[in-house]
Every structure is written in C-alpha cells, then in structure tokens.
Length: 362
Image (cartoon, rainbow, N blue to C red):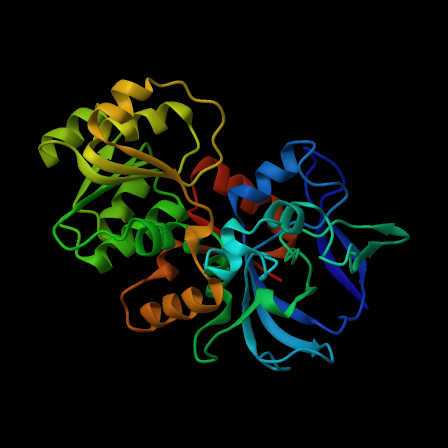
C-alpha cells in the first residue's frame, strides 16, 4: 500500500514528505489510518542525536486514527474503531504483569530498536527499510502496529485532539495521578510549562492540591498555566524560583515535577521541596552533580524517574478522555494544528516555545 509519510532520512535532517510502502498487518497487528499525530520533544531528540534509532526512519509516537484492517488473531480491536496509539511493551515481563508497562524490560528494544517485536518493519522507501518508532511511526498516513498498542476510545470525541494522550499528556498527568498521588491540601510545583507540565497542572487541579506552582520562562505559557489551574506562577528568568517557592509554601512544596531535562533545573526542584518531599524527573536529562547527603538524605527527600506517567495506557487513556468530556481536562487549549506539509514548521514552533503542542493533520 502506497501512502505519504514524513521520513527522517538521517540525523539532524529535516523531515521529507515521501511516498512509502506499508505492508499488511500480521496476525496480531492492526492497520490504522492516522487522522492526526502530536509533535513531541522526544521526536526531535531522536532526529538530532545519532545512535538512538537506526536511520532512515519514520518518527511520530502520538498517533490517533481509525482502524482499517486487523490481523486474524486480534481480539478487542475492530475495523472502524477510533484508537489512540501509545508506547510498545512486551506485556509478559514482571513489570508489565504488575501494571508498570512503562518499565517493561524490553522497553528500549521495542520503542527505539527500529523494528516491531518480530524483528520486521512494515515500512519501505523504494527498496530501503524504514525504522519503526515507538511501535507505531505515526508520521505516516497509515501505520501497522501491535493491537496491544491501540487503545479504543469513544467515537463522540474529536479524534484529532487525542493523539497526544499517548505520550506527552499521559506523561504529565500520569506522573501526578499514578505516581505522586497528592491529596487535597498538598502542594506541587511544575518546572516547565510545555504539554507535559501543563498536563501535570491540570491533573493536580483534579486532586485538589491547595498550591499548584508553575515555573517557566515564557510569559504566554505561564498565563495558560494559571488558566488551567496553577495558583501561582513564577518566571524563572526574572525571579529566584526556589526562594519564591519556599516563601509561598513555608518549607517547600510536597512534590515537584521536572519536565525540562535541564540539569540545573533538576537541582532547583530538589531544593524547592520540603523535607520528605519528592521530585519526579520526566524529561530527557543528562549528567547532574549534587550532594546526596545535603540535598537528599539529610531531609529524607526522594528523587525518582517516571516514564510515560507510569500509566497502563489501556486504562489511563480512556480515563483522560472522560475527564476531557466532563470539562475537567481541557487538552484542546494546548493544541495548534498543522498540515503534514508543514511538519518542519510545527517542530520549529514547538522548539521556540511559540506553540505548546503542535498536532499534525495527516
């Protein structure tokens, strides 16, 4: 089957719109016509850094679409279903079986190895194989993925809005609701008000946190953070974030979520929480130096990493859809739409901070 896709031909190269071939789904796979797909910072990281995913490739991992074909062994997903695609997991290791598939023992191989779990790729450009990304490659108009990656959602919700639930929005909201689990009256600070951070803020509002503090360097993002539930906002370029957080909370926040991936901001997050508080790191972060005794142990603080919001997508994504339908989780306020031909502009607008969550209409 010949379709259009935004192909990454090599590292640090712009996306190229190409006609590619997509093979039919095998027995445990489904084919999905992608309606829209989110643009995520992770796509840019993979595009620009050699050695993570073999090139050439089709990136994209926040797809939403309609099932058009199913393999003979597929159960629970049918032709015509509206689905959100999420990350790949083996579903049989210890972590998967204890409802932590984002910690799947095969996570890296299945999501960054460039192939589906049987070692094949359904995508070709002429005679050249194209790597699969996150088990889906949603920058293609049609994708083939394991049925377990496709989460059926209600048909009465605009499908073009739902793709980012598969990664970025799931990451932010899930870190709050599944991992930190604050209770009413507690305080939470979010460093970085992109799609992940703003999703965390919306989730924190659902829990009844008394203080939800947003930290960013873009005034437009801080304004939106306040609209979505932040009780206080801090411009990190203009104020000492840690000092202001301590002033607002007394001894520091109960929880902090670090979304930027900047090592210095991770350290700020550690200093911004109260004794026995917890920092959750969810962004791509490199090396960081801190004093374990003074920064963590002496006050019983915890520093944890959270992948994909520690979510079980089959359970969590339908829950987020219900929150949206109830008016409690306005994801539409994060999104700007782009046609496929403007995918490079979508990435540029995301990188500059102009747009929170670009979504490409396929």
